[in-house]
Image 1 (cartoon, rainbow, N blue to C red):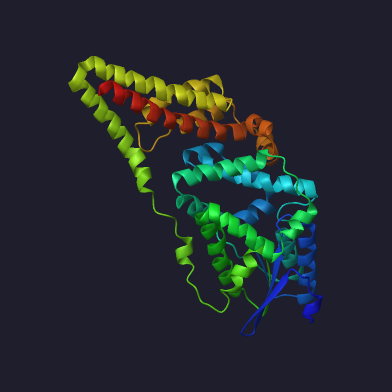
Image 2: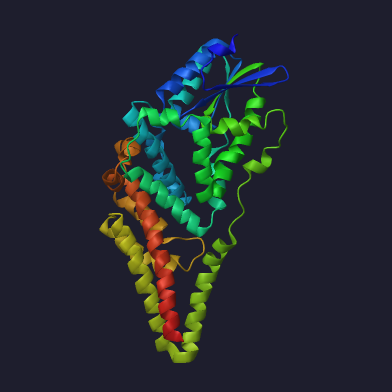
Length: 390
């Protein structure tokens, strides 16, 4: 086979008797789909590797799974924020794809389809998306988390022009290196977990694919980094470990309730029962009111807003409960999502209006905003109580 006939996006790596054809793609590109098809046709590979994990493969190939989602389970397991981030990311890619007339991840799906059509072994070579996101999130400080969420939300609600030439230009390695360099300056921890670690992971999984001729469909940004790890045996278990619980998280869970109880005790000894009662009233009113305002901002049902007010003063003193969970469960009960709501969720979140009007995404927003309001209420009420006591 002549390498000259391969698409320009293909990088060939040899290791022993194995030959790897790395198809560097843009994740929203018709040209990338054609590059995958042409490479497989020329190489006739024993295995086709794609930059997907089992969970992402399932979500892309079984799109009706949205209708089976148990929103109550999502809230109870504390996965509302994680699901919200996933929706924002999917909406961002879909927004670009709609403009270019191509399905996000179409080149990956083409690899999956060709594996089935040709009889090649399909290898899902990427790390589990939940492990990746948890490692990204877990190693960020509070301010960086806030910046990341702001940037993600802004990306979906802005109307920046994207055209085919921009996407294809991104496939050039020199421009990608420049983009990654800027990204690393702003979020070095994210680049390490999201890009560098997955370069290692993808390279090792692709190396282990059966056969001698292997086609791998990966984002073009991964190709330069992956090339460094062929010919090396690297243990992947450290890259699959979840970050340890934050010490600050333990402080917020146990320290703040303890601080409030201490303030009540000091208030009692300094000013008697009346001061303690006033301190308790401040806690109830401020935390409850701000949690209720959070639910109202998410356009929650009146019963949801009321439940936020009643739950916040109690849940903020409990290390494993959250006002948003209570509010989200009430919202799901009074406005139970239908199958149609679940099916429309991926398209609803493409706009601000859709985000707030779809019953499913509204529940997620209620959870997040009620929790945010209650947290702000804790800081404000603690400051007010401390000023009163001392």
